Amino acid sequence: MRWVHHNELSDDDMELIACSSLAVSMMRRKLVIKFNKEDTVARPKQMGIRNCAGLYYIRDISISGFTIFEILFELTEDRDIVEQHLVQYKMSLGLD
Image 1 (cartoon, rainbow, N blue to C red):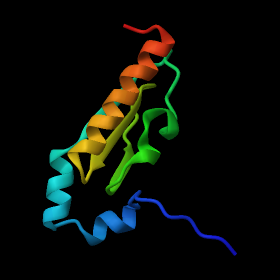
Image 2: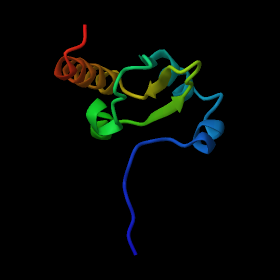
Image 3: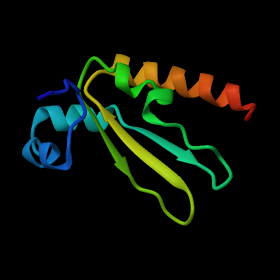
Image 4: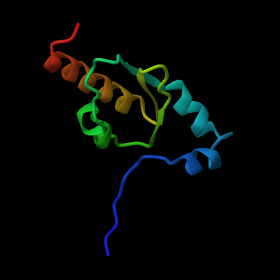
């Protein structure tokens, strides 16, 4: 037997907290990441998602060949850390 501790909310979790102050706070800390067709899509580990101290929710809203993730964060600090990881990831790929 094994189990895992993580802070990622599921779709069901989001339904449960839909009208709560937590959901509203998380929506205020939304980060939308768009990868172009030719971009290498960052994995959660590369985005620093697994290091989040608070709750987060990831939704794939990809359209027309673009990979788009919408990420909601409980903590502003987590959003800032993910943004820092994304900058480092982008620089490692040599993208503008």
